[in-house]
Length: 113
Image (cartoon, rainbow, N blue to C red; front, side, top):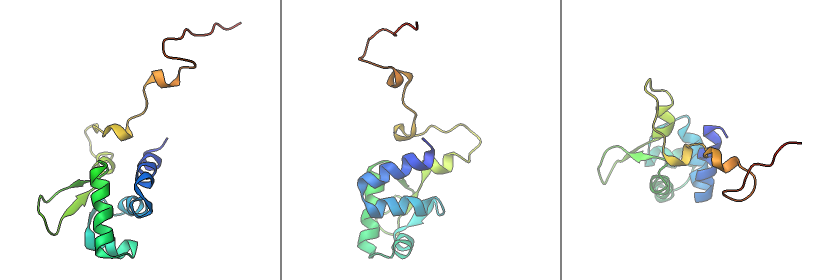
């Protein structure tokens, strides 16, 4: 699954505004509630709630540490463009190889005939 698909799937589980906002954040990886309000064409409160939900899910981080005029950063996306290998949040990590085994945990491989 591509990075964008994983991010959108996670955001869609939160709601339609969060899904739309993640899509916007691929164009504007740093965003505040006023910009989100304009881009989503919703009220300030709705935009702020969507950002808070994305923050709670670990999809974005808040960069200012303030109670007002907060700026949110789409960290995992921006890490894709950094020179050092990213340490992606677990939501973006591929499943382990054990996930692809057929049958129950601990089952033996079926021999080919």
